[in-house]
Length: 224
Ligand SMILES: [Zn+2]
Image 1 (cartoon, helix red, strand yellow):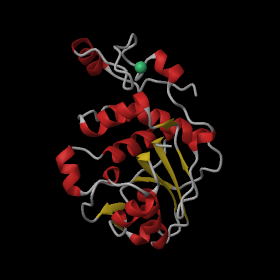
Image 2 (image 1 turned 45 degrees about the vertical axis):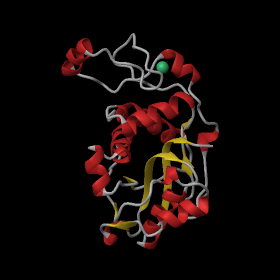
Image 3 (image 1 turned 60 degrees about the vertical axis):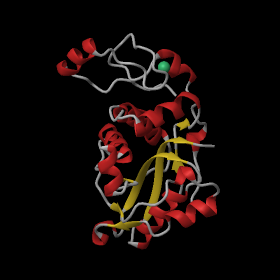
Image 4 (image 1 turned 90 degrees about the vertical axis):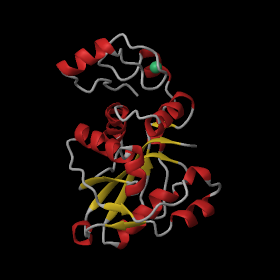
């Protein structure tokens, strides 16, 4: 997939770039063009999915993902989530938006994301799925809003094994903030990575139960 790689930086960023030369968000190489998010080699060699990386869920029609969660993509996403690399969101958003634009049958009214718990967000300083959803929405010129809330912390899905275990862990963890707002809407739900799909399915179930007419999902990467 060939896509634009810059997210329109201004003068302030130019000064910052002189002080801290920007590196490829995937492989870490210093970039020739500081406005690019990733290098030419990564443009050629990222693990792009075929057919939009579609996966099906019980409560969402499909989830699309531009990349596989492997190699430099995995390393990059782990940096994004755990090493204070919130600025990656703008570049991820470009890739994700391109995949959403190109995929047929992706009609939706509004974009939202799989939220962190308030406690986890405070600890990390940002909600990575929210930043990704906002970045993608900006690229798509579509509305984005907070619709779901995580009621309490659960054990990290990545620490658990198979699908039944993950499903049991996440059941009942989310709620819709304003049911009336959701009723009749087609929702595009965004997260960073899809693994078994249990988390997205639980969020989609809560949205459908609240009256959403349809849920489709998009993640930056898929694990398999
Ligand atoms: Zn690179």
